[in-house]
Length: 360
Ligand code: IPM
Ligand code: MG
Image 1 (cartoon, rainbow, N blue to C red):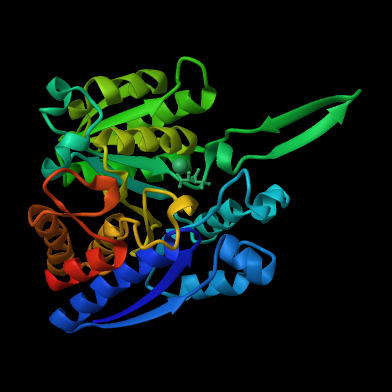
Image 2: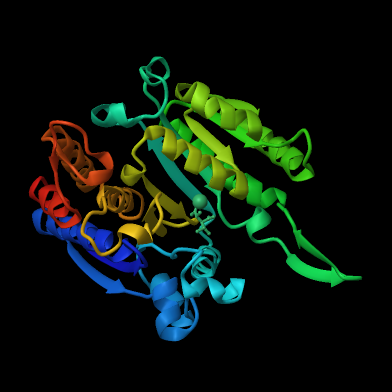
């Protein structure tokens, strides 16, 4: 099979971790007889430095023409980087929002689970983590507060800023369907998270989720208020299978969920549209403080590449091979600094990539 993959190395540790994911994908291609064509495009700070904007139309066209996009991470230190002295629409994150919208990537899947081998890194009390947990956050990605009208004005010397949170029922329905479909492949439970005790957009969200639920009688649906969900994630994470939620709540809850695993450097994500096309990226950020030192953990990006093989190319066997390689490397006792524990062998980013590729 021919795989046309556009890569966005991006900023910070992005280029290092993407290089290792490519290494692993090339090994997969060799072993299973595929031909991969990689093309790199610039986004975020890397694009600002060259083009003055975080994402060019040409880069979007390249991404659109590919079968899938593999991304590292974008952005820098918001306190010190000159990128953050630009107007908000010219900053690195604007590129990410633009590509999500341009490619209609409305469904963001963020799995968060406790690795047996890394259970000691879980910051929760042992009596809570003992049960293990395995959840998937299905975050709406192209609507809500992120894409509503916004403005800052000054009236009579008083500054005022407005952001708007809008959803129409079609936007809610299509993400709800994705949530229920994926729950069918997992443990058949959807927890829809909203703030229906205050927000109209949440009341519509809840109503539409209930309508969609009628088509999935085999899936249990429950509704949870977002503040309660934030509590439940640390109190009893094992209760969750699929968490279905809007853009802003999903942004916050997915960081919380990844933190309770204790191993954010291990978590992948996929952003999908209505076709097989997707953008795959690690759940963590660009970590500018450790960039260029060959100490970043490439596993989240490698696992994002596995998600790409599974969702965009239907190559389940190959995806399994990548996920098994990760499990095997952990079993063999190799760790990057972020997940290091006593008795293990500490390795850098490149060596971790080599070890993973060897196990394909
Ligand atoms: C994420 C990030 C982005 C978001 C930022 C970088 C714009 O936090 O992917 O979760 O808020 O969606
Ligand atoms: Mg976020």
